[in-house]
Amino acid sequence: MLVKASKSSADVLQDAAILVYERENLRNECFPFCSDPTEISKALAASDSWFVLADKGPIAVMRLETSDRTTTVAQLCRNDEASLESIVTGLRRGLHEMKIGNFVLRVAPAQADQYAALGFIRGHTYHRFSRIPAQSNMMPILPLVNVTQRELPLLSELMHAAYARTSNAPSDVQSAEGLLRAIMSGAKGEYLPNASFASGAIPNLVSACLLTVESPGEAKIEQLFTHPLYRARGLATTEIAASMNRLESAGVQNLTSWSQEGNDVVRRLLTKMGFQQDRTVVEMAAAV
Image 1 (cartoon, rainbow, N blue to C red):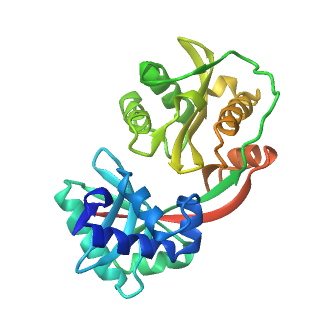
Image 2: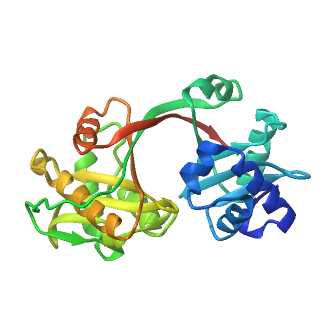
């Protein structure tokens, strides 16, 4: 059974917390402020995005991001005693009950073949970059404004124009609005309007950087896009710098960004700003 961690029984939740605690990399990435399983249990119970797949006890703990009828398993912590096939079967059953049509798993490259054998289709490879936020005195080239759902129509048109000639472009302005609405509604983690910036003066926005809180103490650049006519002017650099100023003041300890393999423009930008590549995943997709 797949249930929200917040709705799990106390015993299942505590066992799930122990499972997470024993995975040092996951613990440090998602629960850096939790020093023992009890604190992790409280953090899981307070979140709407963490789920537990349980039989008699937890066989997997995962963080889900849902947009439209597609769910992305952003984090997956497996019980070593459970087979991968049983976890995928249980996940499919649970997502079907949630009326999800498709799902995507982000796995280490070395695990891709295992998932392919279970019917998953290999998708894009992504690299994660991260750095500690720090204060910057960089002067904005254009005015910077914080953006909220009020600016969704403007941002949707801008995002569609920015991605128009890329392989992962939204099919139209409405689909771009759906992606942005998912970010701002909290489907991908708590949206940070005070640390999300757009360049330009409303209604003439030409670039945007949108952030969420992925885990305690860690923020994530969910979207970074610029109108083709305004690229190579340092707008994205300025927006990220402004975001880091807000994050550093708020005590956020890490800022991450995912870049699709082959996107050398983003890679060069992040590297120039002091980000370091620290993780690689492959997206494996399947129908529920």
